[in-house]
Each structure stands twice: as structure tokens, then as C-alpha cells.
Length: 219
Length: 168
Image (tube, rainbow over all chains, first blue to last red; front, side, top):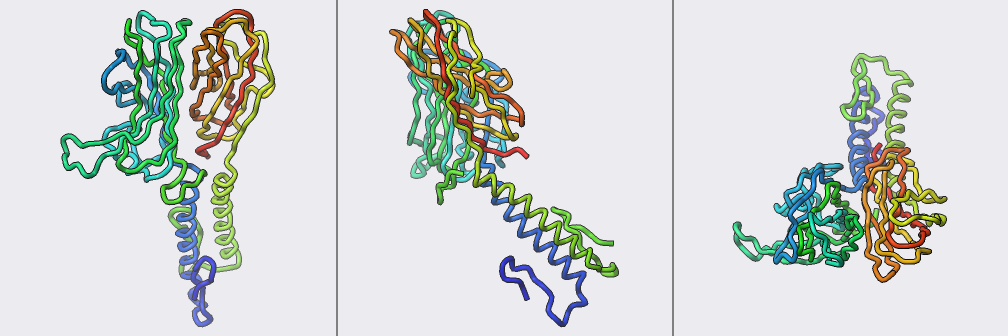
């Protein structure tokens, strides 16, 4: 027989001699049920979060580039994993498109902080644009060589060079429901044509899961 | 000899052991204690720590000087270890002219994130920085304001802090 609430088994009247075995069963059953509960609560209390920080400048960011110019780990900079409580060891913007597949679909906040500084001549009031883009793989395109994807959402922060002798510190964030087909990109564009820009060491990119896809709940 | 479960170490008797009321009490209390531990996660999930405050005004900030804001409610001491997500906005005024304004968010004096805004033509653009910190209990989150222009500036900072991961 079992008790109602926790489904733990207990002794019937005719087998009271098996107390030791029953206590072992009770201990193991309680452990199994609490472990399952604890894992669920830990996930809710501590959502998947990754923080990566660059330890060296990303150099040679050219002006008015046609195409994408990466400023996250995908940009070839040296990034350390500052914090990661997920089962994945991938960079947030890794091109494999499997990060969200590993972490599960859901609502995420993605963010980047970076300081952009000209390597040489400063063009006053030239623009700097920091973008977080999400590209979604098109599963209808059957090619392992050139998989097709399209931009499904982006967040753009634009600033203009103040030419005040300081780097332009910039922050950009995006909250979006990501799927296993999505790839995150941290991109920069600028109009400082007289010299390239550096993204200074200390760039931070982060990702944190806000809620699951089936039940979007802010925890 | 009594044995223990692999994960939580719940104690149960083996054949041949003397089973007295203490054995039942021990097992019951071990399960009870673990349930209280699990309850701490439940409490964290339901009552996530948040801090949202508008600081007092700090005046007399000179142009070209990265100035730590020390006005009342402008700094936050981390109460529990964890990953904290900060959003800081600086409202600035009082200057005669301004070219750029910047707010920096610092952890124990070390820069974590920042935002600089172009204020040419004396436009009052407000810098707003957001970023995460891996923080220990007792760490101090503070801000530093910088501007270039003429006159002196006054600043108030609006701080929003949220614990997103508990490190216990």
C-alpha cells in the first residue's frame, strides 16, 4: 500500500517484520522524489545563463562594410567564459546553431556591452551601430554546405562619435523567443572612414533564459 | 551497520541492526531538513530579489573628471552571492554646455559596463547601461559619471538590480 500524497510505500499489517527493508525503500523513494523536485526548482530559480568577457581588443573593424562584422566571440577575439550554468560549452554566437537546441526553446535576454575606439584618426559625429541579430535556419533548404537563414529579429543601438577623447561605450539588449534553429550574432557597423575601430578588451556578451517556450513565465 | 542513500545520505537500517525509535526519527529529520533546503530554491524563484531606486542628487561634478557618485542611494551592496543584472540610467543637468555624457557601472571599483552618449548641441541625452555581474555577498556596485562641456553637472542615478542566478 502507499500513502496518498507522495506515493511512498508503507507496510501492511502482516509484514511489520520487514522494517529495515521498508525504511530503505522509504529513504530511496524520498530521495528520488526530492531530487526530481530539486532539479525542477533549481532550474526555475537559476535560469540558464552564459556570460563571456573579452580579454583583448578586437581590432580592424572597418567602416561602411558591406556585410557582417562580428564583435562577439565569433569575431575572433579572445573571450573567456565568465559564467556558465548551462550544459553547453558553446559560445553564445557560435555558428553551429545548436546552442538553443541544447538549452531549450524559450524566451531569452541577450546583451552586449562594448567600448568602440578609433585606432587612429577620429571622424567627429560618425556613426557607430551595435546590433544583436537572430538568424533562423530555413529547414526547407537542403544543403549542408550553404544552409540558408534569414534575419528574424534584431536590436540596434546607434550612437555618434563625440570626439571627446573617450571610447564610445555602448550597450544593446534583445528579448526574444528563440528556437533551436536560431543563431545569435553580435555585429558592429560604423562610419569612421579615417581609421578602423577597436572593440576594447572588456566586451561582455550575455544570454539568460527568461522562460520556457510552452509557458512563458518570468521567473 | 546502517547505510546511507547515495545522493542525500538518508540513513536506513540493514538486516541485523537494532531498529529503535531513534532510527525513524533520524530518517524523518533528514528528509525534513532536505525539504527545507529545497524550499530555499522555491522561495528564491517566487521572491526574486529586485532593487530599484532613484539616488539623491550629486552636484558640482567637473568637466572631464570621471566622478564616482556617492550620493545617498547611489551605491548597492550585494546581499547574496549570485549573478546580478544591473540597469543604470543617469539623469544629468546643471551644466552650461555639454558634448558627451557617460555612466559607468563598477563592481568594487572595477568597470563592468557603461554607456556614453553624444550630447552635442547641448541635448540632454541620458546614458543607460545594462550588464551582468558575478557578485559575492558584500560586493559594492557603484557608478561613475563623466561629461565634457562647461560649468558643473548634477547627477541622479536610477538603479535597477535583479538577482538572476543564486550562487549558494
